[in-house]
Structure formats: structure tokens, C-alpha cells
Image (tube, rainbow, N blue to C red; front, side, top):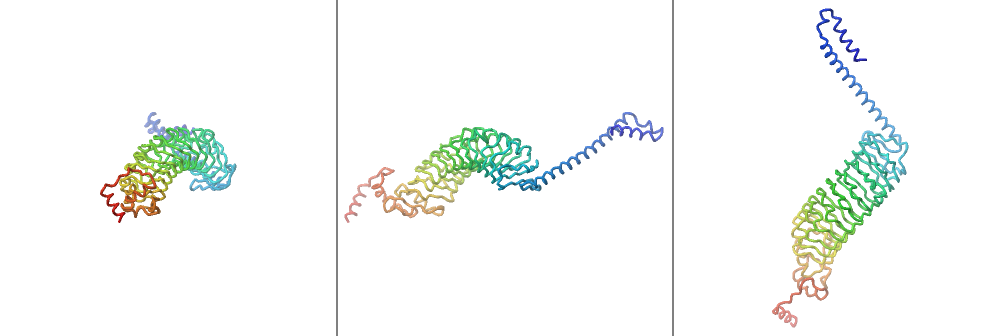
Length: 438
């Protein structure tokens, strides 16, 4: 109706100026003029409506945050955060208003055992969700549906158990979390992770599965995690790793496999992990390091192999880790290190060698000389001989060629030799007899 009035207004405007002016504008020109003025009028109406809408929306949002502050949780509209941290809640408060533009929700350290499947619906701007340290053993299917802005999800210290019966079973609880950067599932009771459970998390950078009951890594479990930087699998029940388990992780920087029961690392398991900087293999059941155990780890700076049962190390095992700066070999079953095995570590800054049963005969001469020349790099208690005989307890760095290689005879009387016994030439034997008779 307003548009019709405008047209009438235009016609009347041109008609009141007399006969001479009445015929100066054609019908087409009048139509064009009216269309232009109608567009201007419509634009002004739209601007007014938009301003009214934004004003109304702002008022409604402000009202929601005011109502949010009346509940038991702390609401901060200036940062768009809601915190129910350590409120000893057994369920979400019915009177707690949850604004749709909330950015962060902290429900950590409570007594929550379950959550409604619609608890986080319509929170399209939510980027951080803390549910750690509760008693959750089950999360409903699709509870994280459409949380496409979520970057940090903390579920550690709960009671999440076998995947087929709970959270991870509905593969897929993580399907919509395409922006997720950090996922914390540590200190639960997870025993099984099905293949594909992490496939949509292509932006994930940190995955923490520490202190669960995981006994093996399913095939292709991590293959789609192209941006992953840190994987934490410390303190699980792993007994082995497959040669392809981590092959697709070309950007990984830290891999934590300590405190498991791993007995062997297949050669070339890390051949594609050229950006890895830290590898944690401490407190496992490793007995041997083969030549290509660490093949591919050209950027590795820290290697933790302490508290294993390592007896044998290939002489070239460290040729594949030229950037290594920190090496822990303490608390193993090593009697000696092969000749030249540490010479490839030109960037080495610190090394731990203590609490190994170093057997001080000719086989350990290389290590004794290396320790003497690099004593400033030892950052634990000084390594000492376990034996044989009177050499027991003496420091490696103080051992000389005469101590070790003349002592070979003492070693042979107590232990079977690890190298063939070479008889002294006849002239040396005669001199030895003459010296003993004298």
C-alpha cells in the first residue's frame, strides 16, 4: 500500500505545476522515476528493520546472560564463558540458563554420571568443553552433534569403558567435531578403539589416551590424523606396535609409548616420522635395538629408553638419529656398547648410562674411553663397573686399557667370554712366566 501511495504522490507532484509541466514527463519516465524512489524507500525500510532486528537480538542475548548469572554456575558475558567447576554437581541444574552464544563451558571436577543427549544442542559457537574428573561411564549418541566450532574437549578422569557400549561406540560421537584441536581421554577405562573412530578429526593436534587399558592399536587407527603433533599412549597395556601404526603421521612431534609392555619395535616403524622430536619408550620390556629401529627419525632430539631390559644394541642404530641431543639408556641390562655406536651423535648434549651391569673387560674399552672424553655429557650418577673381581665398583671413566684388557684374564675365570679368547704369543707367555718366577 505504501508503494502505491508513492506512485500517486509522484503523479500528483508533476500535475500541480500547470498545463505546461504536466506533459513534460512521459509515462515511461514516470515509471522509471517511481521505481527508483521505490527502491530507495525499500532500502530505508530494510535498514530500519535490520537495525531493529540486531537491537532486538542483542537485547535477547543480554537477557540470556543475565538469566545465566542467576543459576548456580558462574557466567561471564564479557568472555562468553560459563563455569560450574568443582560445584559437586550430580546432574546439570534445571534452573541454569545456557546462552546460545556461549564460547566455553567448564563442568570439570563434579559428580556427573550422565548427560542428556540434548545438553549441548544449538551451541554452534562453543569452542571449549570441559567434562574432566567426573564419573561419566556413558555419553549419549550424538551428544556432540553440530558442535562444529569445538576445538578443545576434555573427558579425562572419568569411567568411560569399552567403546562398543558407550561414548565411542556411536562412532560417531566425534563425527561433527571437524574443528577439534585437542582431545583428552586419559585416565578412563578404555580397552578398545575401533578403526575409524578418529577419521573425521583431521584438524586434531593433541590426542591424550594416557592411563587406559588399551592392549593394541587397530590397523589404520591414526591414518587420518594428518595434523597430529602429540599422541599420548603412556601407561596402557600395549605389548607390541605394528610397523604401519604411525606411518601416516608425517607431522607428529611427540610420541609417548612409555610404561607399557612392548617387547619389540619393528624396524622402519618410524620411517615416515621425519618431524618427530621426542620419542618416549621408557619402562617397557624392550631387549634389543636393531639397526633400523629408529630409521627415519632425522629430527629426533630426545630419546627415552630407560627402565627396559635392553641387552643388545646394534652398532649403527644411532646413525638414523643425527639430531639427537638427549639420550637415556639408564636402568637396562647392558654389559657394553658396540664400538663407535655413540660416535654418530655429534649433537649430543646429555646422556644417562647408570644402573646397567657394565662388565669391565676389553669389550667395554670403547665406552670407557668415550665416557672419559665426554664426561660433561653424563647427567646422572657416574657409571661404574659391575665386575669382574676387584674392578667392581670402579668408575668407567677411570678405566685404562691395561685395567680392562689385562683384566680380560680375570673376566674369563668368572664369566664365559663374549669374544674369542686369543692366546698370547709365545714370547709374551715366556716373559709372563719369567715375571711370575721372579
